[in-house]
Amino acid sequence: MCGISGFCDFSLNYYDKKPFWETILVQMHETLKHRGPDQAMIDLQPHVGLSHARLSIRDLKSGIQPMTRTFHGKTCSIVYNGEIYNHRELLPELQAAGYRFTTTSDTEIILCAYMHFGKNFVEKLNGIFAFAIWDDTTRELLLYRDRAGTKPLFYTQTGSSFVFGSEPKALFCHPDVTPSIDKNSLQEILAVGPARTSGNGVFTGVKEVMPGHYHIFCPDGQHDILYWDLPCREHKDSYAQTVQTVSFLVRDTVERQMVSDVPVCTFLSGGIDSSIVTALAVRHMQKEGKILNTFSFDFSENEKYFKSNAFQPERDLPYVNRMLQYCKTSHTYLECSQEALFAALSDAVTAKDLPGMTDVDASLLYFCSEVAKHNKVTLTGECADEIFGGYPWFYRPELMNRDGFPWSADPAARTSILSDDVLRTLDLAEYSHARYEETLSHVPHLDGESPEEARRRDIGYLNIKWFMQTLLDRMDRTSMYSSLEARVPFADHRIMEYVFNVPWQMKYRNGVEKSLLRDACADLLPRELLWRKKSPYPKTYHPAYEQMLIRRMREILNDPNSPVLPLLDRSKTEAFLAAPKELGKPWFGQLMAGPQLIAYFIQINTWMQIYHLSI
Image (cartoon, rainbow, N blue to C red; front, side, top):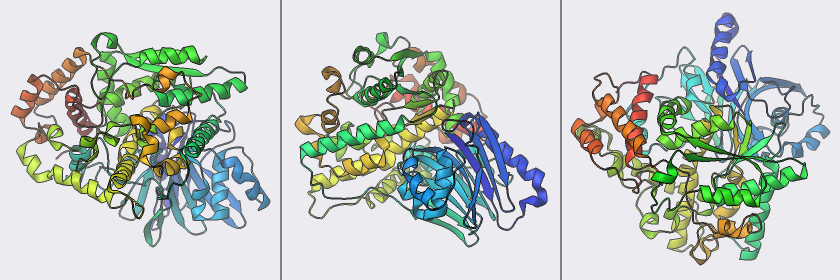
């Protein structure tokens, strides 16, 4: 993985002020150095500048970027972040067409595939990626993003200049781009946050290439092209055939994603998703005579303070230990103290450039920093719940039938401490509902679908396009902050396409969530783990952490220079801080309840301070 950035302006000749613009390119990759500390290079051309911070995973010696190639009278350059898992399959046709390769990197194959097949070559790729290609022949800058949205890519236009980067912070190195916020920024943060509307970069004028899209900047303007979306197809396979297909896809995907020139590890949470990935990774490593590194996460004294609830019924640790009895790995138990968790709240904002999933982000940031001391690549179990229907809003009618995002349908909890003026001005409930209805308008449906099955398809689409995006963004930014590449096998587009069209009764047989995935992987896990009740990512229930949040929030309230104050009603906030916190009634997802609401506004304040934002 890497950090990419750059700029383009057809009205300027960057060579006229070459040292100045080269310095800007250096500053851009310096802001992204955490994504790629192994090597940094720039390429300045008359109308385009490209900058790259490299994390060496494939072809450690030769895969230097920016990379430029000339074939058949066509010259193109690329900066690339990601992994293409099928790049070797493209090689024979390209070689037959006369392309000659000087590296073993997937970067060179991507660039030549574009030159050979044209703009829509991206449809041939299987992987996680965000890359920019400068076509010197057509005078076009093209930005591509993978189907699932695993890798980020932001951009903005200021005057005639187009600026892009893996993270918003890189954009702000450009002399004409200054971070600011407007009404829409606040609506995103307060109405749908920590999620984001697809393509919305929250900062004024900042956008993100949408998943499954590519974006073209050229002399006649900008063009956005959709190259992939979830397809709607009639599912004709029997249950046995469906199980067999899912079994093949999961195994094939993990096998592909184990390819690396540096050792690969896995996160092992004790849930079925990470356990399936770990079991397959162990088998792959055994064929090579190697032992897999695995890592589990928990919080200090969680055995004492854990509180079971409908969303998080039990702890993970016993299931981690059972998996370790079943699979031989080199395992590391990681624990996060309350002090480290609280301190990481600020770092999580720096990593994401935005407020996020508070202590969920912060703890993952901490854990990834520890994993990165041992490995540079990890496989995770993320996204299985969104695709296979693991969340309670897939099957609990009162959640499934909400008129709004099922993980965040009631705006009252998230708006309980906002001032009345802010509530009137921003109309947050209407904004959230408009984004919900807008997404529903894009859901594909089959003719003759029953209302219930149509709603199931709505829920699946909403989860992949919204909730999954939030988790993928979290995983990328928290892992790459410590130069750790996180791969997400369940987000393989072949799995998404196939399972999206599988009828609900096949995903929820005998009233068990994700029964299709469990049946497809029944030979991989011990029975008690295979049929374990879904439990999400761990969080702390320690009262000391909550007290740290309350103290910090009171400091913010008592500091007249706190930038978040114009959003808050002081009396409402004080009353909220004094009341017992709801731990089992989340206002977002399954983990963000009372304490996390305090942490979210602490993060908003931190974000506004970092970027000197005002309302």
